[in-house]
Length: 182
Image 1 (cartoon, one colour):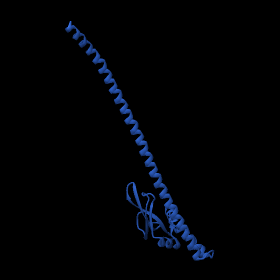
Image 2: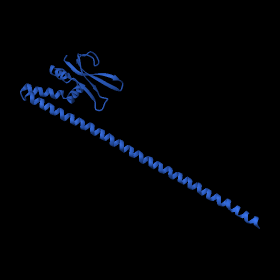
Image 3: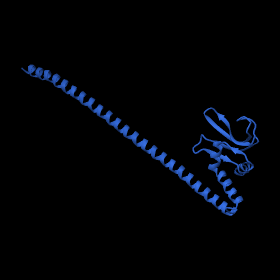
Image 4: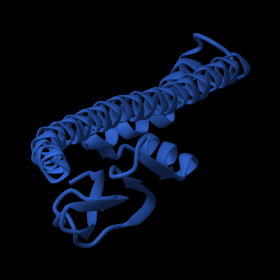
């Protein structure tokens, strides 16, 4: 069986962490492996990938077959592109210098795109946070206004009760005063 480049699961339940390994195709997923070439942490945003680029390229050139997930990881890191460009150099389609220039420009564009995505996510997060704060302050202001209105109504009702009781008490007192004088 040919060698496989695959993921070996580690980490606890609900928080996976993978080692990228070269293993015999017959070996179990988390069993024996030939060489560890990197790690992959899908929990972080963006996913954290640490990869020994040269060893991955070397194993691909030796004929190791990556699994689908590892193939996408290698594509994101540029290993598959580098292999493709090296095949072009072997066939005489381009020189090694041209291939290296193409690879470096791709890497620069990829890094710039990733930086822009991270910046856009951070900006969106800040805008969402600001919108939540504004909405919360509006709700708090409406709640404070309702409480103040309710307290004003209670004070007005209490004043009205006092106003009704006070004239009724004053009237008998007014009647008694003239009666004493007469």
